[in-house]
Length: 145
Image (cartoon, one colour):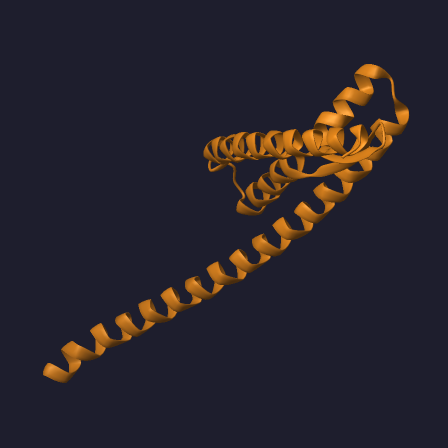
C-alpha cells in the first residue's frame, strides 16, 4: 500500500466518522428547529420553512482536497469560502445549497398542497355529517308525533 492510498484510507475513515457525527448533530438540530416552527401559521409556510431548514442542514457540496474529492456540508464550505475569500468554493457550495433549497421548497409546496386538500375533504365530511345530524334531529320529533 503506497502512502497516497494509505492517506486516502485514513482520511476516508475519518470522513465517515465526521459525517456520522455531523448527521447525528444535524438530526438533533432539525428536531429542535421543528419545535418553534410548530407555531408558524399558515401551515404551508411552516412546511416551506421546514424544507429550507432541512436543505441547509443536509445538502452536501463536493470539495477537492489535494487529490481527494470529498462531500462536505454545503453551508460549511460556503462559510469557509467566504472567510478564506475562495470564490470558487463559495460558488460551488452556493450552487449546491440553492439546488437543495429549491428541491426542499418544491417538496414543501407539494406537502402543503396535499395537506390542504386533505383538510378540505375533512371539512366537507364534517359539514355533511352536521347537515345529516340536523336533518335527522328535525325528522325524529316529527316522526314520533
